[in-house]
Amino acid sequence: MEAATHTDHIFSLTLSEIVFFLTLMATFASSFLGRKHGAHIEERQLSEHKLNKWLVGLSAGAAGNSGFIVAGVVGLGYTYGLQWILLPISWMLGDFVFWSLFPNRINELGRKSYASTIAEMLSYELPQKAGFALKILCSVIILFCLTGYVSAQWLAGQKFIAGAFILPSVVALAVFAVIIITYTTIGGFRGSVYTDILQAIIRLLGTALILGAIVMAVMQDPETFHRNIATAGPEFLNPFPSHTLVGVVGFMLGFAAASLGFGLGEPHLVSRYLAGSSPKETQGAWWIYIGFVQFTWLAMQVFGILLRGVMPGISEPEAGVSIYFQHNVNAVITGLVVADVFATIAATSNSLLVAMSQAVVHDLIPAVLRREKNIPLGAVSLVIGALTMLLSLIIGGSVATIALSSISILGSGLGPAVMIKTMKWRHTGESLIASIISGIAVAVAWKVFGYDSAINEAAAGIAAGLITNALIAANRK
Image 1 (tube, rainbow, N blue to C red):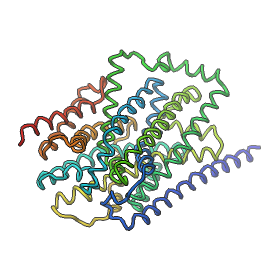
Image 2 (image 1 turned 90 degrees about the vertical axis):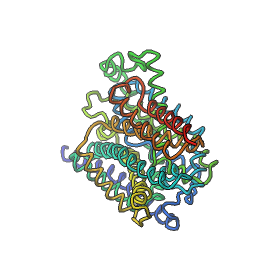
Image 3 (image 1 turned 120 degrees about the horizontal axis):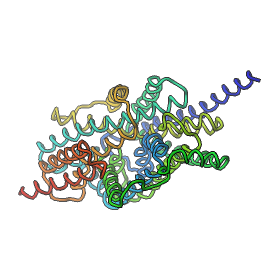
Image 4 (image 1 turned 90 degrees about the horizontal axis):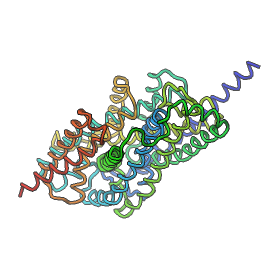
C-alpha cells in the first residue's frame, strides 16, 4: 500500500511538471515567433510594431502585473486581511486618470519623435546638450530603480520555484532567472510582447482556477475556516482598522498618485504605448488593461485572505499559492497554476530586462559617447539579468516592499516630466532635469522621514516635480 502511494505521488508530481513545462515550451515558441515577426523592424523603431489595442492592453497588463500580484498581494492578504483591499481600489483611481489623459498623447509624441524610450521622448525638440544630459539622467534613474524592481521579480520567482518544486532557494533563483534571461535574449521587444500575450491568457485562466479552488475549500469545511479566521484577530476582516477618514483618504490619494506615476514613468509600460498602431488604438486599450489588472489583483487579494482560514500558520505567506496547490489540488490543475504564477512573474521580469537594455543601448551609451553604437540588445539583457540576479541574493527581503518602493521612486522622477512633455506644458531642458531630480529627492526624503505612512511618497514627489518645472520654466524666455 505504501509503495503504491509513493508511486502515485511520483506520477502526480511528474504530471504537474509536464503541464508546466508544456507552457514553458510555448513561452519560448512565442519568443522565437516574436523574433521572426520583428526581424524586419529596427529594434529602436517602436512605432513600426503597430500593436492593436488588444496587444497593447494585454501586453501592458501582463508586464505590469509582476511578482507583486502573485506573491506580494497574497502575502498582504494573508497577513493583514481585508485592509489591503484599498490598495487595488486606489490604484484603479490612478489608472482611470492616466488612461483618460495620457496613452494617446504618449503614442502621438512617440510617433513624432521616433522615440523608443522615455528619454528620447523627453529630449525631443530640446537642444542637443540638454538632450544628452536628459538621456544620461533618465538612464541612470531607470537602471537604479528597475534594478530593485527586477530583483523583486527574481525574489518572487525564487519563492515560487522553491515552493513548487521543493528546491533550495539559491537553486530556485538560478533556475528561474536563467529561464527568463534566455528567452529575453532570444526575443527582443517583439518577443517580449508575444510572450506577454501568452502569459496574460495563462494568467486569466490560472486566476480563475486559483480563486475557484480556494472558494471550494472554504465551502467544504466552513466551520474550520471561520475558526481559523477568528484566530487571526478582530481586525483581520475590517477594511478600516484603526484608520480615520483622513487616514483612508491619504492612503487612497497616495497610491492613486503612485499608480499615475507607474503609468507615466515605467519604461516597460511606456514602450507598449509607443508601439501602438495609432493614438486612438492605443487609447482604446484602457478597458482591457484596467480590467485585466483589477481582476487578477483582487482575485489574489481574496485568495490570500481565504487562505488564512484554510491553511493558517504558513511561514512564508508570499509563497502561499505554490504551497496550497502542491498540497491540496490534483496534478493537472496544479501544473496550470504553477504555469500561471510563473507567467505572471516572468512577463514583468522579461519586460523589465528589455526596458533596461533599451535604456543602455539607445540612451546611455549614445549620450556618453556622443554617437550611436551597434550593440545587440540581447547581449545587454544577458549582462543586466545576471547582475540583478546576483543582487537579489544579497538584498533578500519582501517582494511587496521592494516592488512598491521602486515603483514610487521611479514614478516620482519620470512621471512629472512625461506628464509635462505629453501635455505640452511650458518647459526647458533645464526645467525637466530639475523636475526629475527634485521629484526623486522629495520622494526619498518623504520616505526616509516616515511620512509615507500617511500618504505614499509618489504624491509628494510628483507634486514637487511639477512645481519645480513650473518655477524654472516661468523664469526662462
